[in-house]
Length: 311
Ligand code: G3H
Ligand code: 13P
Ligand code: ZN
Image 1 (tube, rainbow, N blue to C red):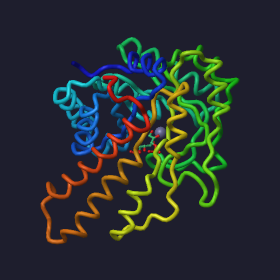
Image 2 (tube, helix red, strand yellow; image 1 turned 45 degrees about the horizontal axis):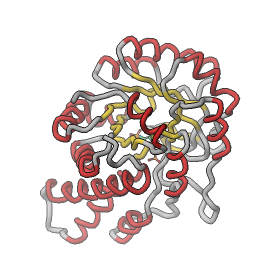
Image 3 (cartoon, rainbow, N blue to C red; image 1 turned 135 degrees about the vertical axis):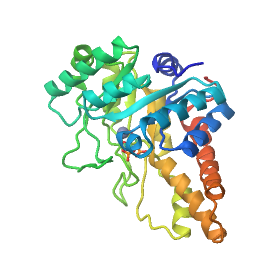
Image 4 (tube, helix red, strand yellow; image 1 turned 135 degrees about the horizontal axis):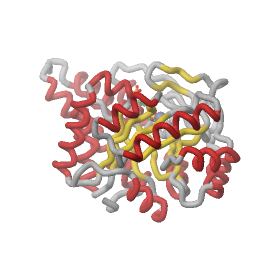
């Protein structure tokens, strides 16, 4: 099976009340940990690549790794550009074998966001590639861009229909209170998401796939292992898993997870070095990092996303 688009995955996920995990990949061990987990539980997957990942690993290495994962597992896997900042990076990924791209015009005015998103959709659709757009702005860190709480904004449900109609996007990322990174909510406050916005968006766009960014749960187990082995993560707080389950049962068909992968891999490697300070073969500690990613992703698929058995 070749790398697929997200069209069929989203149709089934919407109808079935579950979501597809979109996991960020940066190297071979991350790709293997994620895809081996998905193979164990027969789940479709989206593997996504940021501009930072392309800079770190090079486009060609990442596409070849994902092609290898498809050959190895036989799973339906989509290769997606995460947070494309402009037309040029989206075009480069369309030309370079991606099956899905995100054009993130969320920092632009409504009209400028529509214009650049429309331009990407025209090019991508001509090449059989699907497009995710974004309305509303998440707080947190993406690549080198830091979005402060004051600059973040919830999606306005009254804008979504016009945006989707005028751009032709295939899915839409919305802002309902999640944020990027490991520090999502103020310590001592109860994490809250604007499910009322999600509900209203779903009513205005019946059957249309919605995307949730910033959806790592910052699982305490991994934070504790990191801190018990020389790390320093103070007040790291993520999105509670029951909220993600609720979103997946609604119109959310794609749930983006990166920080949880970083935390799991780092926890495994830190623990390994603490237990084996004499080790210096990367295969020894990267094996543990990969094992931790496999365990995390399997748990996400089965207990949060509900995409197990749907490949
Ligand atoms: O949304 C951001 C993702 O976590 C990707 O992070 O740009 O540091 O690769 P990155
Ligand atoms: P997290 O930082 O919550 O993992 O979000 C990742 C993301 O939204 C990638 O686009
Ligand atoms: Zn994101």
